[in-house]
Amino acid sequence: MRRLIITFFYTGLSPVAPGTVGSLAASAVLYLLFTLIDPTFAVWQIVLLIGLLLSCIFSVALGRWAVRNYHRKDPQLFVLDEVAGICLTNLFLPIRGSHGLITLGLAFVAFRIFDITKPPPARQLEKLGAGWGILMDDLAAAVYASILCQILLHLIFQKYG
Image (cartoon, rainbow, N blue to C red):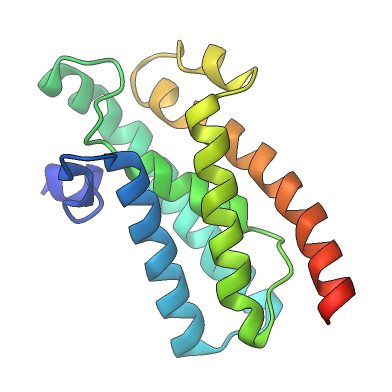
């Protein structure tokens, strides 16, 4: 059960770019939820907060186990931190109607760029213990990604409505 959770339904077992696959899976789940429930902005924020909180809680709770079990400080198959990053990146982004796919897609790309490049303090946060180190670098990357998305989406929606 722990492996199912930390790999986000085994997406982290991808032999190629497990972090990207896990992030894409999280984005796909969010898109599915968005289209199924057609939420107001406030309801969407609650959905994202629930996803963020659950993925953060499980990342920290299972992080120490994953480090010990897979003998790596940040095991590649552990992609629950990417789920948290995708949820945080999307939090407060303007999302409406048919623009949902644009917003989620841009958030995915921006998050992956910052998660891979790890600008300060993201890389330094990896040094925190177990689950915190696994999680916090992704949350820092998500903050950068969200800021970039806020700017770009404002420009896109302003120009194209």
